[in-house]
Image (cartoon, rainbow, N blue to C red):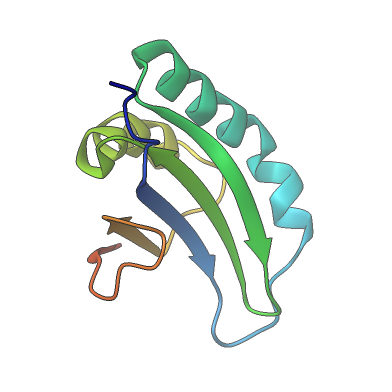
Length: 105
């Protein structure tokens, strides 16, 4: 029996609702993104799948078998990022209508 493809997601968002998002911040996050991808790969928990850039936000998409496990690995990495995340969604699928939402307190 072949295992199903992983389909749980962690979406890390960097949003600025007052001003247009400074796309130069993406460059500042590159080392953090690579460290996050390496941590997931080393643990066999998932990988970075891509990003999405909008006028007021930047989103990073990570996929694996367990979104909660992935966030436990990613949280300390993003805690040290040069740009603070504003929202994280733990999704059971990419199109999850009611993801678990975490926000910076």
